Length: 293
Image (tube, rainbow, N blue to C red; front, side, top):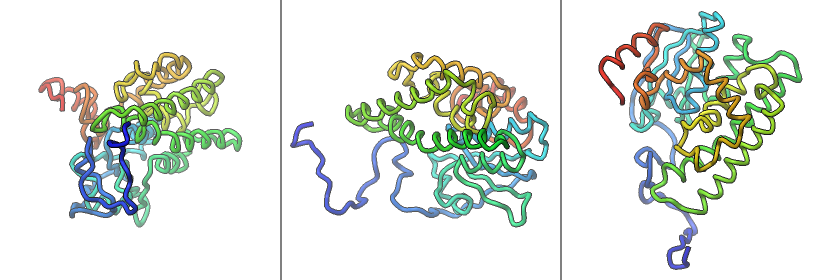
């Protein structure tokens, strides 16, 4: 970059215009609600407010896995939060999550209802509440949490770093794309080396660590994230690909991907979920009317 085009930061940064690029209309440097909008509440104990981004998919997969095990008290209502429209800044959502990020969960089986926000916290909350997908053995539990928090710390470099500058920024810039592509590939290599010796992240058992990591790194190597598979040469990470494909075949994962989804193939969209029957009904409706929102 030439000196005449180089950005020189001011001594004090001020928000003088909306940032450019995708999601510019909802970006702002302050927290809190922008409008009054209460959250809907359905009939089930768990009320999920989300969107089928990778972070949202983590939680819907967890719920569907719990239901697949027969935990009928894990039934939930899933309400769509359109982040492009600023739904996350409604007063009700901000009460559920003051950070205004999806997903947010309200557990109405407690008095008063318990709010749970941050996807990793929700997975841990549900795992402990139902006694599933988190080993009780100290060593295995610790290894599960190691990888759960690895994902929570690493994915922002993949999403907010690589994904933003490669897919959403208003212009392609070599330095940030190179910087975050390097980090994304390093992270894939971390996973690949580990999965060369382990079926799942915590060993032989499928856990919340896999549910947290698969929507990001699994879908990346399956070609579903940022259209960056060729750029990152994801096929080189053969053990990650093997792991991603195995999890992708789980029926609960396939159902979880559908919930709160408003994009992609019509048969994989289920804008809201209030009963198990919604999967079949919504799929039939989508195929009938050709809706591909």
